[in-house]
Amino acid sequence: MTVTFMGNLLHLEGNLPAVGQKAPEFTVCNNGLEPRSLKDYAGKIVVLVSVPSLDTPVCDMEVRRFNKEAAALSDKVQILALSCDLPFAQARWCGAAGVQAVESLSDYKDVDFGKNYGVLIQELRLLARAIFVVAPDGTLAYSQLVPEVTNEPDYDAVLDAVKKLA
Image (cartoon, rainbow, N blue to C red; front, side):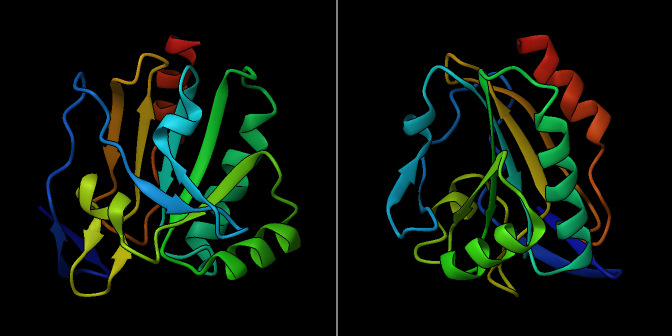
């Protein structure tokens, strides 16, 4: 798989999981350096928002948008923003941006999420822009890989997928 960054071709490691299959497990860190995995959110609708770095303009807009949208969603929905940013940088960014409804998680250590979901950009060791929606039963209900890393995702398609599960 490939994506582009400002028109330049980049290669992704692994394969995107197929909609309808069990969502791949992963282990990442929260802002307190504690491990988190998909099973920690079992029984919820989980929106996995994969971004290259919270400290970039498009990622900033995207996570702020999902933070705003979270207010209108059921409490059965958990939105997770995953990047390879260090947990300390994520905590700083969330505090400065007032992001409280989206939980930031870091894949810096083992890039386990990036590899298991096929979104690790080989050339940059950053995550590609993608969104995955996991149903409460643990199956992957929706997947969106944004072909150009500097573009925003289709928010409406993601929110429609979440609302169909809620």
